[in-house]
Image 1 (cartoon, rainbow, N blue to C red):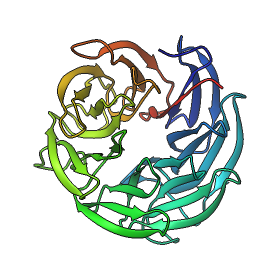
Image 2: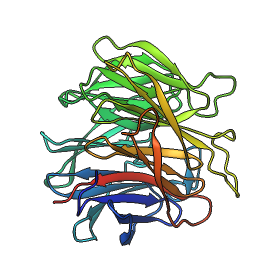
Image 3: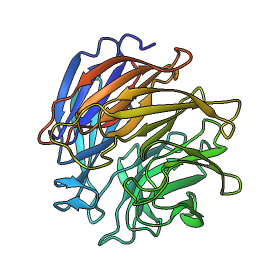
Length: 343
């Protein structure tokens, strides 16, 4: 259960804001204006800072008015912006991953003047770029680290593989054959990588979530889904969550209805999971996160600009506790999420 002082941070992509909400009563504490167009969030618990990527000047992957290059640093306790980092000549920053033990922040970037698609590595103490790692794909969109901080995994919308890099050396060590992929998440024990694939909207493709053995780099199972999936997320308790798009897929609807779905799997091991339930969520689910205890899930729906709060402890299926309306501009609404435990 959320504790007093916990916060939920929510991006509104179109309104170019980050809202800090009370995780208990869901009241708005602060709304901060950030550079266009914010996408993803990550909380660094050691330094109590929140990072927000601004990916495009307007629009989305494949349909934008140019790539942005900024990373906003926020103090969520004070409710203020600390710094806006310029990552130029890197551009299109999106996915975020943290190696807290080594104090390193990884930010995925799209191919451009600085090189092929890859990740830039920042020191979380100085908040300055240390180096970049090439992933050799035009648009790595999400990035995940193994629990030991040895390997990183980049999903690629366009390239037919998931890139595996050795982080200490920056060496590309594997390309796991996967059709254009979306969200990525590692099981708590690091043994299994969940990848949403194929890319949403791929004609004639069967949607699902691929489970990859990180020791061998082999796909060991494909979990079929009714619709295309963008976000996937493992909770701390070992539940696997996925956000399924509605019948219209990734097409924008000026009058969207809440037709997304949260699918939940559980099992004795990450590769032995089975469906345990589902819950209706907002239209266009893009981002998933959960509380540190794994008892609540939060799913952002960009089309109707909502965050659905879901109780994961209710058997035999998850239960919707609340639906939070997030202000938007145009058709782009709720996107990035981060849970911030109290200091």
